[in-house]
Structures are given as C-alpha cells and as structure tokens.
Image (tube, helix red, strand yellow):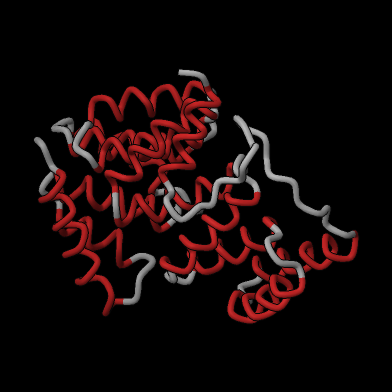
Length: 256
C-alpha cells in the first residue's frame, strides 16, 4: 500500500475530520502563515504553560483562536492543554480540527493517540499501525505502538517493537521502562523488574516510571515494596487508591 493511501485511510478513520477536496497524499492544507507577532505571543504562552499556568493560557488561546480561526499551531496548543487537564472530549475535537488544517502534523496525531491509549486501546492500535508506516524510524511512535500492543494483549510483539525503538534511540528511557513492564506482564516477572529498577530509583524518575515499577513489584508478590515506592512521591491518602488501581491493572493484563 502506498504511503499516500495509508494517509487517506488515517484521515477517513477520524470521521469528524473534514477532508479537503483536491488534497492528495501527505500535502498539508494551505493556511495563512503566522504573523511574527502571533509567533512571538505563542512562544510566550509556551513558557507560561511550562510554568504551570494552563488555566490562564487556555482563556488567552481561545481568544487567539477566535481572532485566528483554524490556525493549527493555536489548535494544537489548545488540544494539548485540554488533554493535560483531563478534558479529553474537548482535546479530541481540537486535535481533529488541527489535523483537518494540517494533516501531517505529527504532534497532533500523537496527542490524539495518547488519549485513545487511555480510553480506546483498540482504536489506538489501529491508528498507530498506520502511523508507524507514515513515520518510519520514529522511535517515539514505535514506543506508543508498543504500548498499544501491550494494552491489546500482544506482549511478545510489543517487546520486539520496544527493542526496535531502543535501537533507534538508546536514550528513550520510556521504551526501556515499557519493555520491562511488558516482560513483567507476560510472565518474565523478575527480568522485567530488574530492567525497570534503575530508572525507577533514579532521582529524576517520573511518576509513570515509578508506577510501572510498582506494577512489576506487585507482579513479583512484593506489594509492601510497591506501596513504599508510591509513598515516596504521593500523599499518604492517595497511596491506597493508586495501589488498588495498579493491582486491578495487573489482574486485567497479566498473562503470566
């Protein structure tokens, strides 16, 4: 199948994304170039977003979106912010609007698929099977694809995909951690735990890495240690709920 055909199928997959007549393959729809003033304002907003001012910036971006309708850079930021705040329905619609204007915008596809990974892993897998063809050699997309395979119970395939992603980008820690979790889920509990451990014990370990480590500990029957890992970065009152959530996840996905 030609790449252009795959891309058309990706756009058809998103039923609410409007196809523009006469646009073929990977050509982006034309839209007015951002003015220098708009680019400068977006750069300022990017800094403020990193500083945790999401609520304020959404209001400002909504105003900019009204003044500059269908600008993909504005739509992408609005989608990302809504997703970060758990407003997934709004984020999905904004990602789709963004892709209607700029169909080859990788970050919008990734943002959309990350929401589907949480709520509709089957859809995420279908979309990522096309994305990995459109973006060959992209380690981050392969990493996402591995997660989708894991969530659909295809652990051995997922592990092969993670290994490919790691070969492409040896600095991609999330792929190493995901590989360890996949191994723990598929019966290689001790190996998976050993692979995740150094990343989870690092000073800059992310909450997701620590949670994956906790899952691997639970899989190895070390629930008390998993509780201690969560207690290192979570308020005490939140630990029991997260521990139960991870235990339930393991029950659903554990094949070993």
